Image 1 (cartoon, rainbow over the protein chains, first blue to last red):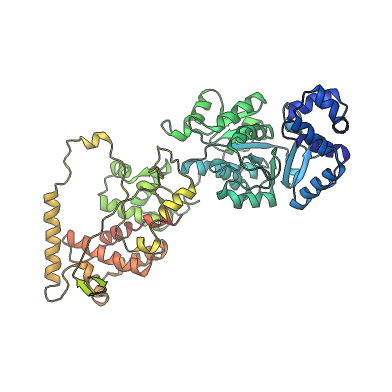
Image 2 (tube, each protein chain N blue to C red):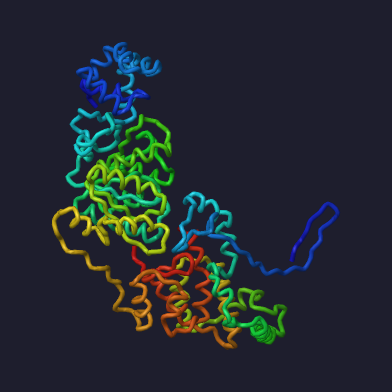
Length: 367
Length: 185
């Protein structure tokens, strides 16, 4: 990728450990441009009381040979440095304060400025319900032309990305490691797919190892890149609460998917709804909440083979339509003997109409 | 039979055992629970479950999932079936089997040979059709199927039923679902 001299100077300045967005801001109040800073390191260091290593790093970055090598390395690794003055820099972030001066990105840079974007975030340990909702809502949003933003973490993040990609949608993954470092391991496949069909971004330097202390800061970019944040499932102490705080500060809409009152994974989401977040039962609720067009809510899925069910089977399927139930709960609700019930369940499972889950739980099948 | 080979010779002991074993679904024990969150990573769960290999699992005839017992059930006055009644039922089934195998070397369903299996665990047309459906859809092995037939025969014996009927067969198949749920992904 071609960079202008000015872009290079921004990238160089922000690549120094110890110079964050606030320092860059201050330096640019004093000097007319980042190039100017690099040409007057001594002065800048004195006036801003920069530490010695920072000063040395600036000297190093002022050298054309260093810059040449730095950008050549980026090209070789397929990484783009998108600085604040780049045309690709997310417009949504420009309007916020303390946003990264440079974002490193891999994939399709045009996706950084989507027309509509929703962040889908939540716990790393979702229930099956959370997983299902994340995949389904992300897919439906994608089909409505909404870009799905998330952090590629395990759990809800990953399912949000996956649901979006499955539906052929655009997705942005904001990493807490260097943009060329796939993390976590179980999402490596997703990482590669997003590099191909979406865009990966990180405010951290290329090759930076994943660092849990980076994750909260990464969350402000997830909400910043989005028009609204949807929390699918989140427990009591959750990183998602941080994303929600950022969303509120940044003036983003906050949505949450309700869950069982006693489920640990729905603690934060239920609380958010109680405190006024938009309750989301499906993608349509997000679209309506954002004021984006107004198609009708999708009716609940029908069981395809319904017509072929016996009366007994239909009864069981009817109960399961209201949600997952255990074998014992089904036993309590019907007059079947346990052997009869087992036989009906077995038959429905083997036909793929219902699914047997861990812990003797049953749910309607059909992915 | 167990054969032990040592430098001084080889000894063969008669031996039969019933293996009963238990495990958790994951290191923290909450995986699959609908109310408690599991704190294990997928990799951890994978590692934990892979301590039981597929072929070993395949040789275990009955897989049962048990839930934590709530306190009120622990203290419930409601009588569960007493062990004495269960023992009587088991003895009765054993007697049925002893009578069935009286002129043979075997004395219970687990021991019968493959040839005899076809005869003793014969399925009527309805059962055979279901067996084929379950076998294919659950992706079972021939060994598993073989054992399912014996389990079905035993369930029928416990009920004092001459023939293996559909509920017996279905119950036997239902003890094979844990494999796909946990190990199959």
